Amino acid sequence: MANIEKRISNDGKTSYRVKIRLKGYPIQSATFERLTDAKKWAQQTESAIREGRHFKTTEAKRHTLAELIDRYIKTVLPSKPKAIQKQTALLQRWKDEIGSHALIDVTPSLIAECRDKLVGEITLRGKLRSPATVNRYMAALSIALTTAVKEWGWLEDSPMRKVTKPKESRGRVRFLSDDERMHLLKACKESNNPYLYTVVVLALSTGMRQGEIMGLTWGAVDLNQGRAILHETKNGERRAVAITGHALELLKELSKVRRIDSNLLFPAKENAPQKPQKPMDLRTPWETAVKKAELQDFKFHDLRHSAASYLAMNGASLAEIAEVLGHKTLQMVKRYAHLSEGHTARVVASMNDKIFGNV
Image (tube, rainbow, N blue to C red; front, side):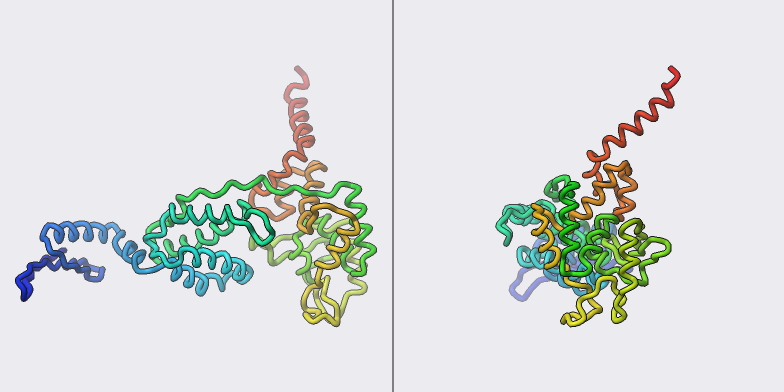
């Protein structure tokens, strides 16, 4: 219920003091020079309180984007230890750009301006920032804004929902040809690093990510069942990985000479500064082998693409590839669809033979 009190100051000026008292809500008050303005504010504010809009707007005026980002980094990111460093860096960019703005002024158009700036910038590598990277910046801010909406009541809605994301390419599909694979494996066998060949064979035969392979422990590997259990994956879900054939043989041989000072399959050197509880440094031996094999534009992650491509070319469905790689949806594996066209054609031909074979 709104109460309007008329006041006259010592100098004879008239003002109108409005107080709104609603059960369950703090008292709201404001002062106006005109009675009509006082009545209008009272009506609008009381209506907004009843509809749950008033206090969110007030909070959006009271807090800046920098405050939101600082609170998110301090209270939410610690529960995501793997993402802390990367997400903090992404959010810091938004804080530097528009952190001084009150949340109510962080509009879709303001975010879009920052997006366009990110798209047009040259990175340290001398290239335009990719749409995928820009989308990671936007995703980092989006989840922070959503948290402020759902959990803190600082915003009524996230302005990011109305901002268009840059369109990404279908995704890189660089996989090894038969000759390239032969040359790379030969170079890995000849490497001074005793683990490199086994690591690369594992990557090619299972599609595991570099971090998943380097984090493997003997406790997570069952050589009798021919599988490894990945407890920490990119999507946060535990995953069982089948290990068969040559890869399994290599792990069985490795188990016979495993280090007793580390539970890792591929630990750092005994005299390495990071000690055997850390995985080995893969970068130098890997880059040396790639150079020796004379591979062009080939990264370690492309071994995962190679595994997926080989699966597609050998008749695996997209659902099966997604399951092997540990993707929750088929979106990420659609890039391999063109490699399984022959398999798709065989499935369609088989179906047609069954329903039209006797026609």
